[in-house]
Amino acid sequence: MSETTSFSSQAIEMVTGAWALRAVWLVVPVVAGPAFADALDGRSSAVRLTAAVILWGGWLLGLTATLVPRTETLTAIRVLGPAAAAGALWAWITDADGATAMIALTVTVLAAALAMSPQVGDLFVNGSSYGDERRMALRPPGALLVGPMAVVWAVAAIGVVAGPLLLAARSWVLGGLALVIGLPAAALAIRGLHSLARRWVVFVPAGFVIHDPVSLVEPVLFPRTTVRSLGAAPADTAGTDLTQSAPGLVLQLDLVSPTAVTRRHPRRDPEPLETDSLLFTPTRPGALLDEADRRRVVRG
Image (spheres, rainbow, N blue to C red):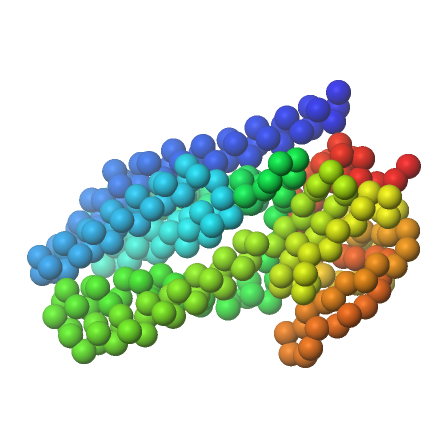
């Protein structure tokens, strides 16, 4: 009964997060529209029209993404949510009406925070699962959180909007360059961000899979009969590190006998090895351990 209750509470938590994101995203045009209009006041009609098309197109894409939980749409909302907040910040800096801009910034920051939340991430990642699977997201590598991820996101966002806005402003040379360079750069940046959304642990009927293209050359299945224990990693652990220095509680998977894995390295060739202990960092470690208990992943 306790396992069923835990599973139900997790499901309610994820669904609540998703509906909160949808509700906030629905009101973004209402609260942010006036701030954007004030910030664009005085620009040419072509720039205002182009900006309006971009803003409404991004909002509609984001709304559609919130309604279709998938790994792909998770990447979309995690690009568009911060983009909306960045736009509201720009509107505030450009001396739009102070109160209007502050409300817009508050709501868009809330939308971005909900898009980045672990609950929404798990729900969307699991939306791409098949049959009796349960996918649970892994935290992004710690080195990327310091700055590179923000730079990649900026390339994705600016690369899409810069060209059309510059052309609308009759800056033909810069606008043409922005289209030729910016759009391919944005596509590469979005692809890179999407690779982070494709990192997860997945529970399957046979056992437990670590699917992490950043850390492993290929996913590895650990059948239920091979799992000795799963829990918080001790401070002095010697397990094979797949965490990529991600912040948060590190879990340790101990196996009955060594299993072959091929670990990726950023600056050298992949490393084949055999290990009986692996370390990883899920976004919701408590929920993952509850799911492991519910599925009887751990022996005994």
